[in-house]
Amino acid sequence: MIVDFSVVIPCYNRAHTLCRAVQSVLTQSYPAWEVIVVDDGSTDHTSKVLESFPQVIYHYQDNGGVCSARNKGAEIATGKWLIFLDSDDELEEDSLIQFSNRVIGNPLTEVIQASYVFVDGKSSILRNVTTGDVGFVSGSFVIKKELFNALGGYDSNLKFGENTELKFRLDKSGTKIDKFDFVAFKYHSATNEGSKNLVNMRYSITYILSKHEDYLSPHVKHLYYQNIGVIELRFQNFELAREYLLKSWKLNPKKMATLLRLIVAFFPKVSKKIYTPEIPL
Image (tube, rainbow, N blue to C red; front, top):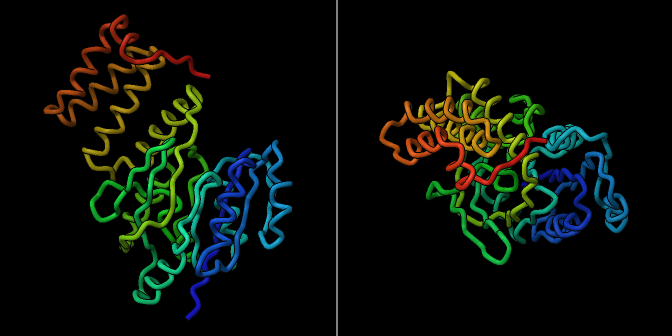
């Protein structure tokens, strides 16, 4: 049985890491059906890097965000299975053979999620899929293209939390995720873009809260409201910070850390010493 994996790599100004990502796919012990790089409007030498990989399908588009790039890659893909790999990450050598064996052994499965290693500088942390300390991140799962299309793909409104939002829709659809304990890839920590990243995070969390309001558990809402509240503290929007932190605390009154953040929000001078101020872009 041939399990055909289309590996989709979205890329935006990552020429310096793209080669590593592509090579990690091309050197798999079980060959990918195809490798698709979607260049999301890069202004660096991404296209030049790919001249060394004629077997890679290359598609250029105007900048539309990582979700748009992944969706375009899925549209181009001819394989029955999709795996999305970010351009600064890398698959482990036996990832595809492991996923393939799992597909063959569980023919009814539609999504398989594995463990991964989080790499931050010189330190590495195992994120184990069976112990609950793993996020649903691109590179850690394979999904049937048919199911991905039925779900509507990634939500292109998002620039943060898009994998988590996709999982919410998977859960809502009743799809069972087959959790398979092997290390699929190395997740390299991306450079933090400061206030721009925080703006994207704030917008995306607010959007997800609105989109899935009737589905999200009180615990998840508590965490999301708290995250927004802390971001507003960083932006020195103290009234908004108090509003969101109060919502968060009401959902979990026993959480003293949230209560302390709420109290800090009433004292701007103290807040500035605790939370590094950022100016929104």
